[in-house]
Length: 198
Image 1 (cartoon, helix red, strand yellow):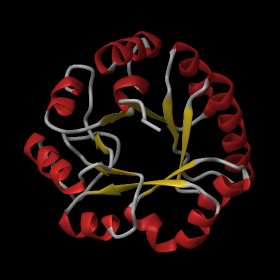
Image 2 (image 1 turned 135 degrees about the vertical axis):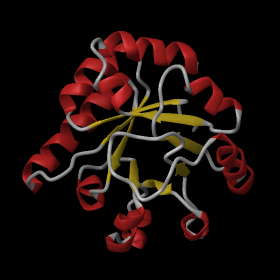
Image 3 (image 1 turned 135 degrees about the horizontal axis):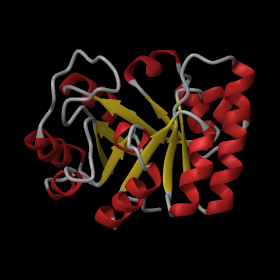
C-alpha cells in the first residue's frame, strides 16, 4: 500500500468530519491529556469516519486503544516507544510509524522494521517545544538515503509553500498541523495542500 503524500494531524474527530470529505486520504489522530474513555470514543469515531471515506487512520500513542478498536496504523514518538509493547502491536497487525530526531533515534527505529519514519522538525515549529533545532532540507536527503524504501515523513514547520521543496529533496510524505488548524480558512488550505502534493 502506498501512503498519500499529504498527512495532516488533528486532535479531534471534529476536524476529520470537516476534512475527510475534501479528499484527505491519510490522517493522524493525536489526542493529548484526555480521559481514557474520551480517547477510546474518539478513536472509534475516527476509525469509522476514515473507513467511510476510504482514508488511512494513524492513531498517535494509544496503542492499546488502537488494538482494541481494530485500527490498522499507529504512530509512536520516542518516549512512547519506551512504554509500548511492540510485540503486542505487531501481533495485532498494526503498521507502525515512528518519530526520529537524531542519529541514535534513527538507528533504534530502523531495528524495529518501521512502516514509515518521520523526521522533524524540518523547519522551526510552533506546535511544541523541542530540544532539537530545525533539521533542514539536507538532513531530509540524508535520512532518505539511510531509510531506503521505507517511506520518509517530513514534519515540523510545514506549509503549502514549503511542501514541494521537502518532497523534492527526498521526503515521501509531508505532515502538517498548524498550517491547517491555525489557518483562517482550513478547508481552503487543505485543498491547496492536496493540489501541491498530488
